[in-house]
Image (cartoon, rainbow, N blue to C red):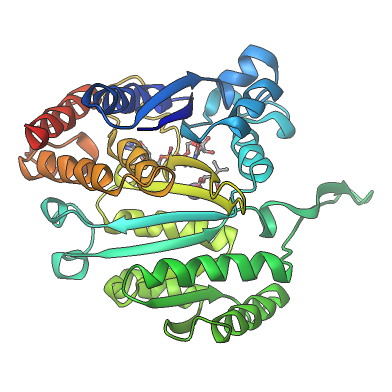
Length: 370
Ligand code: NAD
Ligand code: IPM
Ligand code: MN
């Protein structure tokens, strides 16, 4: 029986509301026996800026590095629109990703049977959907230098972001994609824009070379990222694992979210490399969605993406696959009973609040373990 240390970073907007619900799930597993979780809590994003002028403090950063996993809500909001760029709320999340070297971001898009009607796409297109977008998370245009706005002195300014990928960065995310595909349907689609970007040419070359080096049992397909976006909406079930860069992965995973009915349904895991000695890896689990300032404080936030993100922690950090399956089943059962937060409700459906959805999932966990 192991004890795992979690650092909870609720963040801003709906972050604290959905974190309250995941805390109930953590307590439920603690009360059940088996592995237990000790939690500590810190500040990230605008709430950290308000407290000490940084989007995450060095102290909380050190706690994150020492934790077995970080459970992260969401950051950002209009309140901080005019704070300096370096300390804007999103900078806290980017620092966590970079300093913890969380290069592999797993964003599954699964359509729960009960929600097949909630998507903006036709039911037959998304029914039974189970794909995984693997987004490179510590490189590309998010972090490349130079990144600046310069004054050209003629009344014009120039904004510069730099897309950079080195071989090792592409190779490690490609390996992760092939290994994940081996546990699924055995197919990887790599997306870049080699037709216009040098980093896309290198991405394509390195993914191809990595495939030849021990992963030929996996089917590999290359697709231009713009066409990939189109195919995701046209017939998403053609995909198994999609591997792509930081920016394309950000955009394609929001598109994939809508396939499943709502951004409020999509969890994610951000993983570092496995330590050769301990076998452990640094990890952060967070919903794909943001702080949803438009609904913060109204009780309308769907806590499922956050709760399912803890489910990914059970699976990927703690080797508790049976517990993760149980939590997924509890979510599916609550949905099967017709329980809906506003974002996944159809016209005329009765809706429930964030807290009620959290309680319903706990009740389903109770029922499953009875
Ligand atoms: P958002 O994801 O916060 O919201 C987009 C839309 O989806 C909104 O209408 C919102 O109400 C809805 N939505 C999102 N999560 C929901 C949930 N759990 N339940 C019900 N509805 C939900 O994106 P945005 O509005 O573009 O960004 C708002 C802020 O969040 C920005 O400051 C942005 O930078 C930040 N952001 C943070 C993260 C993160 O912390 N990981 C991710 C994305 C955006
Ligand atoms: C996400 C978000 C972040 C990103 C922001 C908040 C920095 O959109 O996690 O998808 O762009 O990566
Ligand atoms: Mn995003």
